[in-house]
Length: 114
Image (cartoon, rainbow, N blue to C red; front, side, top):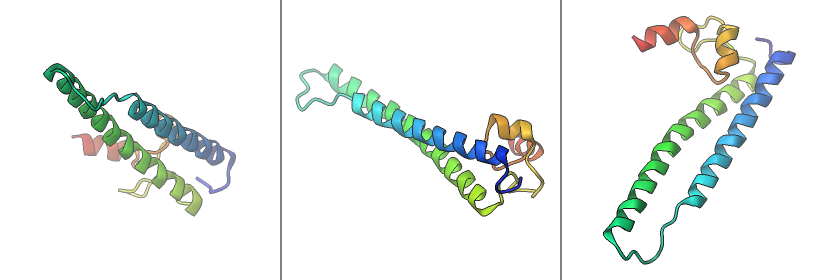
């Protein structure tokens, strides 16, 4: 993909919007965690531990997405966006449309999954 074409600009905006949404989602989830100073019951402590575990799981997944988005944005900036990191071939438009932060083409994704 060419660095400045309209499709790449649209993808850049989509990636930046996804980044913003993920960050907001993580902040809202973190703000909703309720860890009181005093826990009267073991049940409350268990609930708080479960909430924290859920948050950490979600955060780990979302952090990985943020890293992929940042890599894709850097590739757009450098003019290398849209090429498979494994084989160097262009990433199919159907993959880019579904997963704009994808680093692999359809074939390499398929081979990695096996």
